[in-house]
Image 1 (cartoon, rainbow, N blue to C red):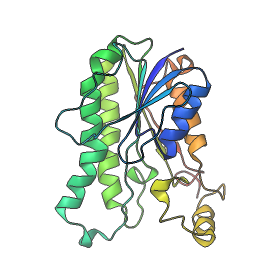
Image 2 (image 1 turned 135 degrees about the vertical axis):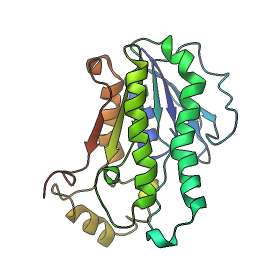
Image 3 (image 1 turned 90 degrees about the horizontal axis):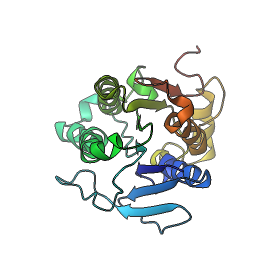
Length: 230
């Protein structure tokens, strides 16, 4: 039994991962911002604003075995309509939030058993898609952070990132709000389907596990083949 910290564990991929880890017998501390949840099984939920100047992590145990950072945003707009503030807001949640959480729990991770960090990028960071400049800037930073920290923290802490394509979560609800949109997005992918939170959570769970103890510094795409199959 291990102890995992899931930031953004109350919806979407974070919720699916928290449930999987709990069902596998691990203890999970899962943060929420707006989607308040009640404790269930091995999952303890707690409020956390990742954009705060100081984070209260006093309820965490002295050691944790894994950190997963899930908060994100999907804002698709033409580049000429985006203001500087939009980039800063996106970076604040997706990049600076991750940096702050990692810094606050680093000592606890160092005490963990085969500790691992899993971050989230996007298939858009390495592929050119229309109206994805905002997403690409923040997720490109996450990919750079993943590789840099994996070098700095080796051999003690492994650091990897998952880069999904569109996944059926509340975050993507505007893009998948009806059957026509779902079918159109599915058709763009060679596998002709949309990803599910459980599929992404399965990979995240593996990267946290001892079975992945020789994997670090990787950006792993889970994208129905859209980034490599033409």
